[in-house]
Image 1 (cartoon, rainbow, N blue to C red):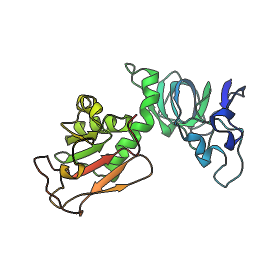
Image 2: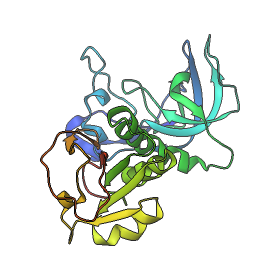
Image 3: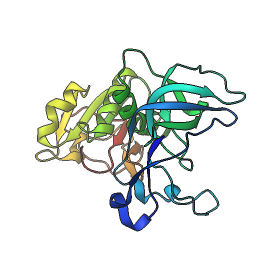
Length: 249
């Protein structure tokens, strides 16, 4: 099969090569997926898992990429829940060969069926932003119906996903971003918008006990109680916050 591999960490994207590699075989609880679309994150080649295994041994040449959508072509021993010919999407393990190839072996538990009305490209693009938004809102932020949430970068990839998930969960969504992203943020579900070029973010307000943003590395921040208290003005007061780490894109 054709695959993109990396061998030199210092070379960055200039060091990627298109080569022929053996088609992967399905291990226990694996499936093999023929890849129709895959995703690649801009800083992915800086991640240690591309270069070493879990005990620090060199594992190059390795195949980068983790997001995928495709069709199951083989099942490993003991694999359940998926079938040959089924459309799927999901994430590969960080320490195994990835998705910039024609086929990939991946644990079945890391995949889920892709609905027939969702394009493969859309499915592959959804995985990591969707997971990031979900974790920020529900695992870290513990968002519940009836609460309000402040979504930073609401016109961006993760922010727009967070807005949709929060609205679906019954939350009141306040988006923030640059002026040019206002309509996009509103289209994706924000019910209010804070223009960071002209509005004071701190005036969005605090919950009854205040709120504080705890920035985390993986492109999200979640807000909880006990922060500095400021006048909330006329804005709806957020109980939770889900923030994009980095610029809108």
